[in-house]
Length: 243
Image (cartoon, rainbow, N blue to C red):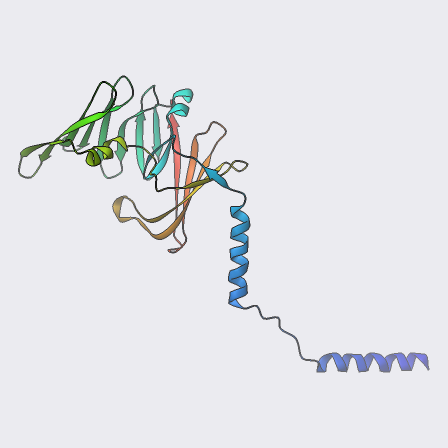
């Protein structure tokens, strides 16, 4: 008798379960976006403000002169971007890009930028030179620019004394005051954001971009990963050193 009753109860349970409609959990797009924002906010808490003013920079961070000097780095090749020659003082003496152009830099005994020469490998033509002249106290007084027009074969010279124009020479290889950085010291990541990046050969990263520099225990940058927050594009640059 009990077996029959149990069997009947099981049948009723099965019928009841089949008749109940399946419940679907719906998650709104707003909830998903809020979750993403929450995760991003949590991730940002792992980073603290960072002063990158002692880094050499030319659109992208290059490295610290003091570190180059300590590690006796003589050359840095950022794959797909630029190569740099570095002197024993950790200063950049030459810059080569992948579009066949290069620049040379010389310095005073005090380490102040003395001249800039922009050239091309083939043919070996100097596009222009910029000589800088300082007062005894190290104040930049003037610059003399000589330009050569390859097509017309004409040479023009210009003397610059306006302080606002001279300032551009003092900003060479310096991090822009408009840039702000954060750092995750545990994971060795330096982070910043930039809009509308343009690279050689028509490569672009339009819109807002997140740049993350990964550095090693010697404070040398190993790689840079750029994620396009608007374009969804991604670029990776690997830093290789020679000494």
